[in-house]
Length: 105
Image (cartoon, rainbow, N blue to C red; front, side, top):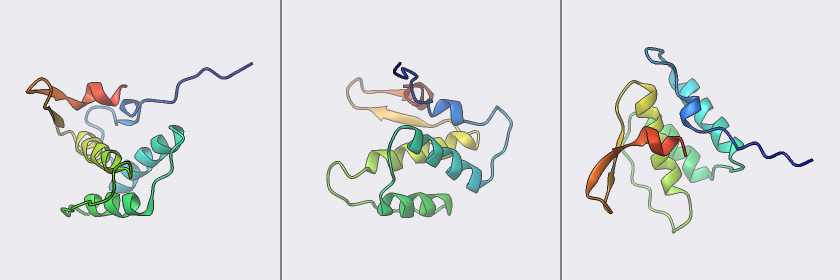
């Protein structure tokens, strides 16, 4: 019998409202979610996540398909874990949409 269970959503890894998470827990929840998706972070992604956790700005210049969007997803997740509202700009509709809905997919 095949296991038809879907991997958990990233939204499920968010803390409860008012719950504070230390940086190591934010990173752990994200990397656990990445692994549950069947993905493995590349070294440049791991380094980028650590830089973002340290509050540093970065430029991630890598080839297409090398995981820049996953790093951007982490930045949204990190913001939401600290109680901030994270938004993404949708160029298709020229409107802003809450990332929470994107994390649920």
